[in-house]
Length: 69
Image 1: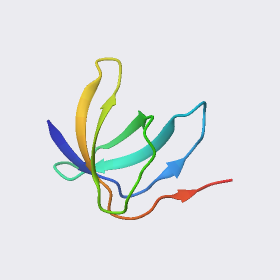
Image 2: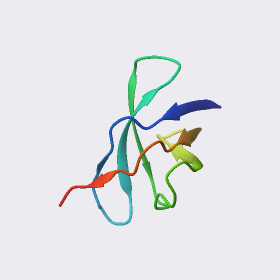
Image 3: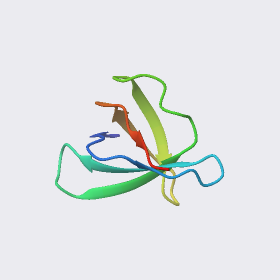
Image 4: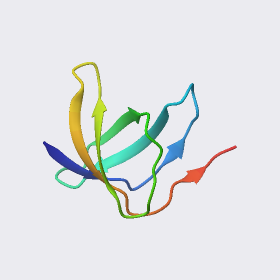
């Protein structure tokens, strides 16, 4: 399981999904993940499922994402 940290978060509310732009701490490649649970606390670690294969990622939340209206 790869650990990624959120460096930029652009939230889009499509149904109940939140799309986050994240950058891996192990590589410079950017990934886009969608997940349903809302981000509850600032430094919480979440496990999310992404992609068609439902890969699991540990996500460390480092700052509160801004909601774009």
